[in-house]
Image (cartoon, rainbow, N blue to C red; front, top):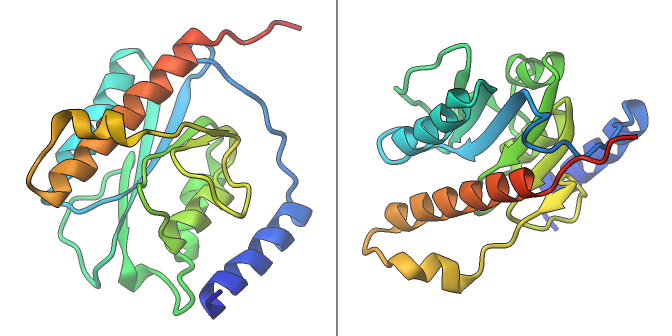
Length: 192
């Protein structure tokens, strides 16, 4: 385990003790605000992520996207509801600047959807700090960041083979997003 990972583990434990989170499943009909987290390569998958967010907005859902670019500088546009940060906005240990974390801490979200295929440390911090009732991802981690995990099988991914690596990652995002929404729509929230 690297020093950066150990520091994140220590931070996650302290954060959980300081701000215990009330986990609550929220179905699609009752969810009004979403946070989408993803690794964002501006030229390749920016349009894909924006399209997925647009699908939620068509259903009158409030959507915020936080993307991480694993480069020193990026040129992608950042708006109030589509925030992209890069390596220059993280500490030496991989923690995003307070400005980035404040965006996900101050606004409450019903659901966080983590579309990353391989977890990046700065995005783990974003997922940890997200003020949300329910957090959903496509991978299992050692830090219990997700309440609900949907695993995409190789069979589902290989149904549409592509030659470019980024096309494969975009296809993964689309399949994972579709499966998450399908489950959220199929499972109804129990009324107390």
